[in-house]
Length: 107
Image 1 (cartoon, one colour):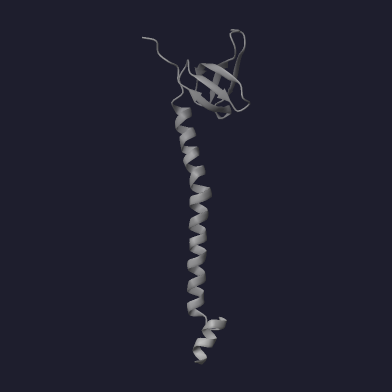
Image 2 (cartoon, rainbow, N blue to C red):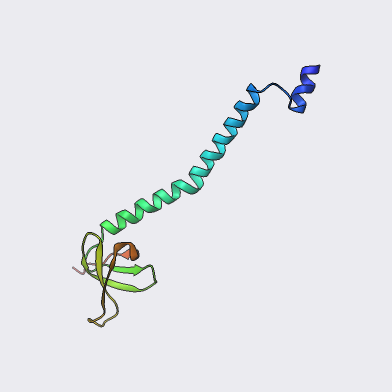
C-alpha cells in the first residue's frame, strides 16, 4: 500500500521518472523539428532549385515586389529589365529573386 501512495505522489525512486522525462523531451524535439525546421529546409531546397532553373526570358518577381524579364543569367547575378523601357535594366543578385514565372513558348 505504501508503494501505491509513493507512486501517486511522484516520490518513486529516480530511474523510471527520468526515462519518462527523456521520452517527453524527445517527443517535443521531434515535434519542433517537423513543425519548424523541416519546412524551412524544404522551402530553401525549392528556392535553390527554382533559381538554378531560371532562363533568359522568364518573368521574375523581386523581393521588393517588382516584376521584370530576365535579360542575362550568370552564376550569382542576373540582369532584369523592368517595364517596356529598354533602358531600365538592373543587375542584381539571384537571392533578390522571390519568384520565377516561366516564359510561354509560342510555337
